[in-house]
Image 1: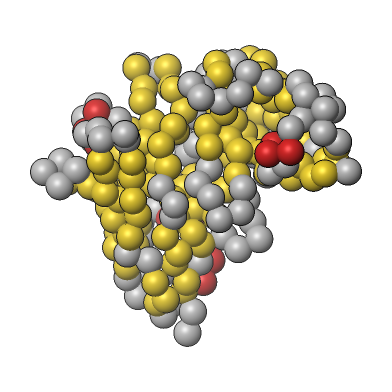
Image 2 (image 1 turned 90 degrees about the horizontal axis):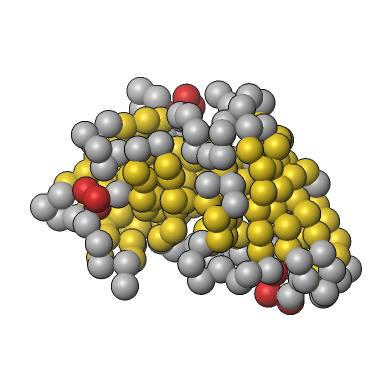
Length: 122
Length: 107
């Protein structure tokens, strides 16, 4: 059964860094587009970043560009979200999800983790 | 970035009701819309992908329609477990963007 499990969240001061991990089981991360989505307290879902199965290209929401980096370690079957220069607005539950795509056809994010909580506060 | 305008933001309905949630994209996005259900403390659940395809395991009372700019999610007969928050997501172009969400509550 395909699963992902996030870890690495915590309480961190503004300006500091954190690395989130998304460990996959039951499938290989290099076969899927892997995404990070977050939900700030009392807010809706926000797409954050993804890494493509095809060539490993990466994309980000504008508010994290230059601060966050998504990466993939195929040997560990794990995806990471490196977060630098954290600000209070980054406080959220961060979810990892997989998406299968074929060219321009997307099959939706069908496997999600339970999320890991990041709190940015002094 | 493409904006997804979702409506209504909240909805009160009864078990057995038929309800429809709408998302309008700020530009044409073919059929690149998915719908997700979110319950407190749980992982989001995929219901519909590519605008109208029912995800395996999702109940058949959920259906999606639309293309270009206008998309809908319909629940044909509400069940108690359907009371949750629903989001559309466009995956046509980066950055992918969610609608603001529709909170479905019991009347």
